[in-house]
Image (cartoon, rainbow, N blue to C red; front, side):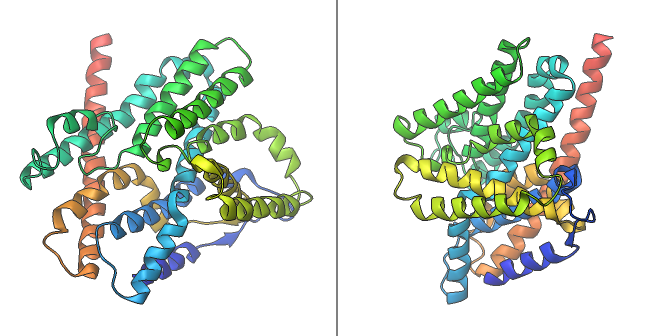
Length: 356
Protein backbone atom coordinates (compact mmCIF):
# COMPACT_ATOMS: atom_id res chain seq x y z
CA UNK A 1 0.00 0.00 0.00
CA UNK A 2 2.99 2.31 0.31
CA UNK A 3 2.68 2.63 -3.47
CA UNK A 4 -0.36 4.84 -2.85
CA UNK A 5 1.88 7.52 -1.34
CA UNK A 6 4.30 7.16 -4.25
CA UNK A 7 1.38 7.76 -6.62
CA UNK A 8 0.21 10.72 -4.52
CA UNK A 9 3.70 12.20 -4.62
CA UNK A 10 3.68 11.83 -8.41
CA UNK A 11 0.30 13.56 -8.61
CA UNK A 12 1.59 16.44 -6.47
CA UNK A 13 4.71 16.82 -8.64
CA UNK A 14 2.59 16.89 -11.80
CA UNK A 15 2.32 20.56 -12.71
CA UNK A 16 4.35 21.79 -9.73
CA UNK A 17 6.33 24.96 -10.44
CA UNK A 18 8.05 27.87 -8.79
CA UNK A 19 6.08 31.08 -8.74
CA UNK A 20 6.93 33.45 -11.56
CA UNK A 21 7.43 36.59 -9.48
CA UNK A 22 11.18 36.72 -9.00
CA UNK A 23 12.52 37.72 -5.60
CA UNK A 24 9.00 38.45 -4.35
CA UNK A 25 6.11 36.70 -2.62
CA UNK A 26 2.92 36.51 -4.65
CA UNK A 27 -0.46 36.47 -2.89
CA UNK A 28 -1.58 33.82 -5.37
CA UNK A 29 -0.68 31.21 -2.74
CA UNK A 30 -4.03 32.11 -1.17
CA UNK A 31 -5.99 32.07 -4.41
CA UNK A 32 -9.02 29.83 -4.72
CA UNK A 33 -7.24 27.67 -7.30
CA UNK A 34 -4.22 27.08 -5.10
CA UNK A 35 -6.10 26.45 -1.86
CA UNK A 36 -8.41 24.03 -3.66
CA UNK A 37 -5.41 22.02 -4.87
CA UNK A 38 -3.76 21.93 -1.45
CA UNK A 39 -6.99 20.73 0.11
CA UNK A 40 -7.21 18.15 -2.67
CA UNK A 41 -3.87 16.72 -1.53
CA UNK A 42 -4.99 16.46 2.06
CA UNK A 43 -8.41 14.96 1.36
CA UNK A 44 -6.63 12.15 -0.50
CA UNK A 45 -4.48 11.63 2.61
CA UNK A 46 -7.69 11.53 4.67
CA UNK A 47 -8.95 8.77 2.38
CA UNK A 48 -5.72 6.83 2.94
CA UNK A 49 -5.83 7.31 6.70
CA UNK A 50 -9.43 6.22 7.18
CA UNK A 51 -8.98 3.29 4.82
CA UNK A 52 -6.15 1.87 6.94
CA UNK A 53 -8.46 1.70 9.98
CA UNK A 54 -10.75 -0.79 8.22
CA UNK A 55 -8.14 -3.35 7.13
CA UNK A 56 -5.26 -5.38 8.54
CA UNK A 57 -1.85 -4.75 7.04
CA UNK A 58 0.42 -7.81 6.91
CA UNK A 59 3.33 -6.94 4.65
CA UNK A 60 6.25 -4.63 5.45
CA UNK A 61 5.39 -2.13 2.73
CA UNK A 62 1.84 -2.05 4.07
CA UNK A 63 3.19 -1.35 7.54
CA UNK A 64 5.07 1.62 6.13
CA UNK A 65 1.79 2.89 4.74
CA UNK A 66 0.22 2.73 8.20
CA UNK A 67 3.35 4.29 9.71
CA UNK A 68 3.09 7.32 7.41
CA UNK A 69 -0.61 7.68 8.19
CA UNK A 70 0.11 7.65 11.90
CA UNK A 71 2.91 10.20 11.58
CA UNK A 72 0.74 12.59 9.57
CA UNK A 73 -2.08 12.11 12.06
CA UNK A 74 -4.42 15.04 12.61
CA UNK A 75 -2.14 17.36 10.66
CA UNK A 76 -4.04 16.26 7.56
CA UNK A 77 -7.01 18.50 8.51
CA UNK A 78 -5.11 21.64 9.53
CA UNK A 79 -5.34 23.32 6.13
CA UNK A 80 -9.09 22.66 5.89
CA UNK A 81 -9.57 24.62 9.10
CA UNK A 82 -7.09 27.36 8.20
CA UNK A 83 -8.53 28.01 4.74
CA UNK A 84 -12.06 27.97 6.15
CA UNK A 85 -11.19 30.62 8.75
CA UNK A 86 -9.26 32.65 6.19
CA UNK A 87 -12.09 32.58 3.66
CA UNK A 88 -14.71 33.59 6.22
CA UNK A 89 -12.60 36.51 7.40
CA UNK A 90 -12.01 37.68 3.85
CA UNK A 91 -15.79 37.76 3.35
CA UNK A 92 -16.30 39.63 6.62
CA UNK A 93 -13.74 42.25 5.56
CA UNK A 94 -15.62 42.86 2.31
CA UNK A 95 -19.21 43.01 3.59
CA UNK A 96 -19.17 42.62 7.34
CA UNK A 97 -22.73 43.42 8.43
CA UNK A 98 -24.61 41.70 5.61
CA UNK A 99 -22.33 38.66 5.70
CA UNK A 100 -22.74 38.13 9.45
CA UNK A 101 -26.50 38.75 9.33
CA UNK A 102 -26.85 36.02 6.74
CA UNK A 103 -24.07 33.80 8.09
CA UNK A 104 -26.26 31.07 9.57
CA UNK A 105 -28.47 30.73 6.48
CA UNK A 106 -25.89 31.33 3.74
CA UNK A 107 -22.82 29.67 5.29
CA UNK A 108 -23.82 27.26 8.04
CA UNK A 109 -27.11 25.97 6.60
CA UNK A 110 -25.63 24.67 3.31
CA UNK A 111 -22.86 22.87 5.20
CA UNK A 112 -25.22 21.42 7.80
CA UNK A 113 -27.83 20.35 5.23
CA UNK A 114 -25.15 18.37 3.35
CA UNK A 115 -24.11 16.76 6.61
CA UNK A 116 -27.75 16.06 7.52
CA UNK A 117 -28.33 14.24 4.23
CA UNK A 118 -25.11 12.26 4.67
CA UNK A 119 -26.29 11.03 8.09
CA UNK A 120 -29.53 9.83 6.49
CA UNK A 121 -27.47 7.86 3.96
CA UNK A 122 -25.50 6.24 6.79
CA UNK A 123 -28.74 5.33 8.58
CA UNK A 124 -30.04 3.70 5.40
CA UNK A 125 -26.81 1.70 4.96
CA UNK A 126 -26.73 0.70 8.64
CA UNK A 127 -30.34 -0.44 8.47
CA UNK A 128 -29.63 -2.46 5.32
CA UNK A 129 -26.70 -4.20 7.02
CA UNK A 130 -28.66 -4.89 10.19
CA UNK A 131 -26.50 -2.59 12.34
CA UNK A 132 -29.32 -0.51 13.79
CA UNK A 133 -30.40 -1.83 17.15
CA UNK A 134 -27.24 -3.92 17.43
CA UNK A 135 -24.34 -1.48 17.17
CA UNK A 136 -26.28 1.79 17.03
CA UNK A 137 -29.26 2.76 19.15
CA UNK A 138 -32.00 5.26 18.42
CA UNK A 139 -30.20 7.79 20.62
CA UNK A 140 -27.03 7.28 18.60
CA UNK A 141 -28.96 7.98 15.40
CA UNK A 142 -30.55 11.15 16.77
CA UNK A 143 -27.29 12.50 18.21
CA UNK A 144 -25.54 11.67 14.94
CA UNK A 145 -27.37 14.64 13.39
CA UNK A 146 -25.42 16.88 15.78
CA UNK A 147 -22.11 15.11 14.96
CA UNK A 148 -21.80 14.23 18.65
CA UNK A 149 -22.04 10.49 18.08
CA UNK A 150 -21.13 8.30 15.14
CA UNK A 151 -23.20 5.71 13.32
CA UNK A 152 -20.22 4.86 11.16
CA UNK A 153 -19.70 8.38 9.84
CA UNK A 154 -16.98 10.88 10.70
CA UNK A 155 -18.02 13.17 13.54
CA UNK A 156 -15.44 15.32 15.30
CA UNK A 157 -14.46 17.47 12.33
CA UNK A 158 -18.06 18.35 11.55
CA UNK A 159 -18.83 19.02 15.20
CA UNK A 160 -15.85 21.38 15.40
CA UNK A 161 -16.94 23.08 12.19
CA UNK A 162 -20.44 23.78 13.50
CA UNK A 163 -19.08 25.02 16.84
CA UNK A 164 -16.61 27.33 15.11
CA UNK A 165 -19.35 28.74 12.87
CA UNK A 166 -21.46 29.48 15.95
CA UNK A 167 -18.45 31.14 17.59
CA UNK A 168 -17.99 33.35 14.51
CA UNK A 169 -21.64 34.37 14.51
CA UNK A 170 -21.73 35.10 18.24
CA UNK A 171 -18.46 37.06 18.24
CA UNK A 172 -19.15 39.28 15.23
CA UNK A 173 -22.90 39.71 15.84
CA UNK A 174 -22.33 40.64 19.47
CA UNK A 175 -19.55 43.09 18.60
CA UNK A 176 -20.91 44.18 15.23
CA UNK A 177 -19.95 47.83 15.65
CA UNK A 178 -16.55 47.26 17.25
CA UNK A 179 -13.09 47.13 15.74
CA UNK A 180 -12.63 43.68 14.18
CA UNK A 181 -9.83 42.88 16.60
CA UNK A 182 -12.37 42.63 19.42
CA UNK A 183 -14.63 39.93 17.90
CA UNK A 184 -11.51 38.12 16.70
CA UNK A 185 -10.17 38.09 20.27
CA UNK A 186 -13.53 36.82 21.54
CA UNK A 187 -13.57 34.11 18.88
CA UNK A 188 -10.04 33.04 19.82
CA UNK A 189 -10.92 33.03 23.52
CA UNK A 190 -14.00 30.88 22.87
CA UNK A 191 -11.88 28.46 20.85
CA UNK A 192 -9.32 28.19 23.65
CA UNK A 193 -12.16 27.68 26.13
CA UNK A 194 -13.47 24.88 23.92
CA UNK A 195 -10.01 23.25 24.03
CA UNK A 196 -9.84 23.54 27.82
CA UNK A 197 -13.34 22.11 28.33
CA UNK A 198 -12.77 19.16 25.99
CA UNK A 199 -9.28 18.44 27.29
CA UNK A 200 -10.20 18.52 30.98
CA UNK A 201 -13.87 17.59 31.26
CA UNK A 202 -15.11 15.80 28.14
CA UNK A 203 -13.58 12.44 27.30
CA UNK A 204 -13.83 12.48 23.54
CA UNK A 205 -10.18 12.17 22.55
CA UNK A 206 -7.59 14.84 21.81
CA UNK A 207 -8.46 14.84 18.09
CA UNK A 208 -11.67 16.66 19.00
CA UNK A 209 -9.66 19.81 19.73
CA UNK A 210 -5.95 19.53 18.91
CA UNK A 211 -6.17 21.21 15.47
CA UNK A 212 -9.05 23.62 16.06
CA UNK A 213 -6.79 26.65 16.63
CA UNK A 214 -5.95 26.60 12.92
CA UNK A 215 -9.37 28.14 12.25
CA UNK A 216 -8.89 31.39 14.23
CA UNK A 217 -5.28 31.41 12.97
CA UNK A 218 -6.69 31.60 9.44
CA UNK A 219 -8.92 34.52 10.44
CA UNK A 220 -6.05 36.39 12.09
CA UNK A 221 -3.88 35.74 9.03
CA UNK A 222 -6.55 37.35 6.85
CA UNK A 223 -6.86 40.29 9.24
CA UNK A 224 -3.12 41.04 9.08
CA UNK A 225 -2.74 40.07 5.42
CA UNK A 226 -1.76 43.55 4.25
CA UNK A 227 1.04 43.73 6.82
CA UNK A 228 2.12 40.19 6.03
CA UNK A 229 2.33 41.13 2.36
CA UNK A 230 4.58 44.06 3.17
CA UNK A 231 6.86 41.93 5.34
CA UNK A 232 7.19 39.17 2.76
CA UNK A 233 7.15 41.35 -0.34
CA UNK A 234 10.75 40.29 -0.89
CA UNK A 235 12.87 37.35 0.25
CA UNK A 236 14.46 39.38 3.02
CA UNK A 237 12.50 37.76 5.87
CA UNK A 238 11.27 34.64 4.12
CA UNK A 239 14.10 32.20 4.76
CA UNK A 240 14.62 33.42 8.31
CA UNK A 241 10.95 32.82 9.07
CA UNK A 242 11.08 29.44 7.35
CA UNK A 243 14.03 28.39 9.53
CA UNK A 244 12.31 29.51 12.75
CA UNK A 245 9.02 27.79 11.90
CA UNK A 246 10.83 24.60 10.91
CA UNK A 247 12.69 24.56 14.24
CA UNK A 248 9.41 25.16 16.11
CA UNK A 249 7.73 22.38 14.16
CA UNK A 250 10.48 19.89 14.95
CA UNK A 251 10.54 20.99 18.58
CA UNK A 252 6.78 20.62 19.06
CA UNK A 253 6.88 17.31 17.20
CA UNK A 254 9.49 15.92 19.59
CA UNK A 255 7.82 17.36 22.69
CA UNK A 256 4.16 16.75 21.81
CA UNK A 257 3.85 13.67 24.03
CA UNK A 258 5.56 15.41 26.94
CA UNK A 259 3.15 18.33 27.02
CA UNK A 260 -0.11 17.21 28.74
CA UNK A 261 -3.63 17.14 27.31
CA UNK A 262 -2.43 17.38 23.71
CA UNK A 263 -1.60 21.07 24.06
CA UNK A 264 1.76 20.46 22.41
CA UNK A 265 -0.03 19.09 19.37
CA UNK A 266 -2.14 22.26 19.19
CA UNK A 267 1.09 24.23 18.72
CA UNK A 268 2.45 21.60 16.35
CA UNK A 269 -0.64 22.02 14.15
CA UNK A 270 -0.11 25.78 13.95
CA UNK A 271 3.57 25.33 13.04
CA UNK A 272 2.66 22.78 10.36
CA UNK A 273 0.06 25.14 8.89
CA UNK A 274 2.66 27.91 8.71
CA UNK A 275 5.10 25.55 6.98
CA UNK A 276 2.53 24.77 4.29
CA UNK A 277 1.84 28.48 3.82
CA UNK A 278 5.55 29.27 3.49
CA UNK A 279 5.96 26.43 1.02
CA UNK A 280 3.07 27.60 -1.15
CA UNK A 281 4.39 31.16 -1.11
CA UNK A 282 7.23 29.92 -3.30
CA UNK A 283 5.84 26.82 -4.98
CA UNK A 284 2.61 26.42 -6.90
CA UNK A 285 0.94 23.01 -6.61
CA UNK A 286 -1.95 22.11 -8.84
CA UNK A 287 -3.34 20.06 -11.68
CA UNK A 288 -6.66 18.76 -12.93
CA UNK A 289 -6.74 15.83 -10.47
CA UNK A 290 -6.01 17.90 -7.35
CA UNK A 291 -8.51 20.49 -8.52
CA UNK A 292 -11.12 17.73 -8.87
CA UNK A 293 -10.55 16.40 -5.36
CA UNK A 294 -10.51 19.95 -3.97
CA UNK A 295 -13.85 20.66 -5.68
CA UNK A 296 -15.53 17.65 -4.04
CA UNK A 297 -13.62 17.78 -0.76
CA UNK A 298 -16.63 18.01 1.55
CA UNK A 299 -18.59 15.14 0.02
CA UNK A 300 -15.52 12.91 -0.21
CA UNK A 301 -14.74 13.59 3.44
CA UNK A 302 -18.20 12.90 4.84
CA UNK A 303 -19.19 10.00 2.56
CA UNK A 304 -15.98 7.97 2.28
CA UNK A 305 -16.80 5.65 5.19
CA UNK A 306 -19.98 4.47 3.49
CA UNK A 307 -18.06 2.27 1.08
CA UNK A 308 -15.73 1.00 3.80
CA UNK A 309 -18.71 -0.08 5.92
CA UNK A 310 -20.48 -1.77 3.01
CA UNK A 311 -17.56 -3.74 1.56
CA UNK A 312 -15.34 -4.55 4.55
CA UNK A 313 -17.18 -7.84 5.14
CA UNK A 314 -17.43 -8.80 1.48
CA UNK A 315 -13.94 -8.09 0.10
CA UNK A 316 -11.05 -9.75 1.89
CA UNK A 317 -8.26 -8.67 -0.46
CA UNK A 318 -6.88 -5.37 0.86
CA UNK A 319 -5.89 -4.00 -2.52
CA UNK A 320 -9.16 -4.83 -4.24
CA UNK A 321 -10.99 -3.41 -1.22
CA UNK A 322 -9.19 -0.10 -1.65
CA UNK A 323 -9.72 0.13 -5.40
CA UNK A 324 -13.44 -0.60 -5.08
CA UNK A 325 -13.97 1.77 -2.13
CA UNK A 326 -11.86 4.56 -3.60
CA UNK A 327 -13.63 4.41 -6.96
CA UNK A 328 -17.13 4.22 -5.51
CA UNK A 329 -16.40 7.01 -3.01
CA UNK A 330 -15.50 9.36 -5.85
CA UNK A 331 -18.62 8.38 -7.82
CA UNK A 332 -20.89 8.76 -4.79
CA UNK A 333 -19.35 12.15 -3.91
CA UNK A 334 -19.84 13.50 -7.45
CA UNK A 335 -23.44 12.24 -7.65
CA UNK A 336 -24.17 13.57 -4.16
CA UNK A 337 -22.84 17.04 -5.04
CA UNK A 338 -24.76 17.12 -8.31
CA UNK A 339 -28.03 16.04 -6.71
CA UNK A 340 -27.61 18.34 -3.72
CA UNK A 341 -26.80 21.40 -5.83
CA UNK A 342 -29.85 20.89 -8.01
CA UNK A 343 -32.10 20.32 -5.00
CA UNK A 344 -30.66 23.26 -3.05
CA UNK A 345 -31.05 25.64 -5.98
CA UNK A 346 -34.69 24.62 -6.43
CA UNK A 347 -35.43 25.19 -2.74
CA UNK A 348 -33.70 28.60 -2.77
CA UNK A 349 -35.66 29.64 -5.86
CA UNK A 350 -38.95 28.67 -4.22
CA UNK A 351 -38.07 30.62 -1.07
CA UNK A 352 -37.12 33.66 -3.13
CA UNK A 353 -40.35 33.37 -5.11
CA UNK A 354 -42.37 33.24 -1.89
CA UNK A 355 -40.56 36.31 -0.52
CA UNK A 356 -41.28 38.23 -3.71
